[in-house]
Length: 229
Ligand SMILES: [Ca+2]
Ligand SMILES: [Ca+2]
Image (cartoon, rainbow, N blue to C red):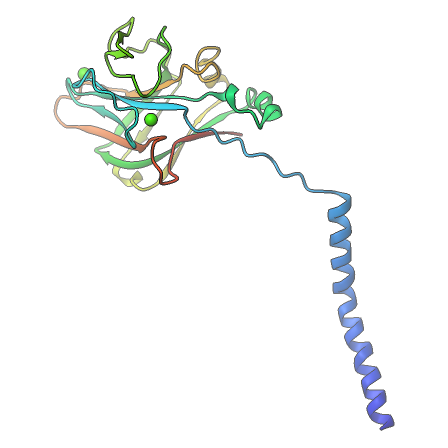
């Protein structure tokens, strides 16, 4: 009996010693969490308030509520995609908003179609009129012809990127450095006019070159968005 009691005491000591480091570690962890809370950054992920495809061949067609955006190069049948981000309307991130103006922007696009390799350029889309996705077309906005006609873009090329068939079903990221995307201000990205994605070489004569992206109207969680780094 004595032996059994001694054995029990010994095993109790061994178990307690074994657990001791774990317990104190756990206590330290709790303590550390209490004393130095780890800040959780507010993700600044902004979806386009408006986006649409402008169709050269159907100049009056309003495509802004379709689930797909298309950039295409084909003779008289080019397509351009326009998007607008209302950065200043994002309320829950007041501090990050200010910070965002000093950071690079990453445009995230989900590729849902591609025919032949297409090089795409991003430019500011700065028509004098304001526009919204429900009433915009290649030729006009809300019944008013574009001042320049044809959704024409005159701003500088911000950056270019290439989409090919290998990108179908994947997210692609296009980085606009702080310097580049500031060219869109004050009436561009920040002011809400927007940007346009168009083929570098429009009017392709021999073969269709096209890239399709999910739009802000998709319900699949694959909407385009921008983030900041
Ligand atoms: Ca849209
Ligand atoms: Ca054309």
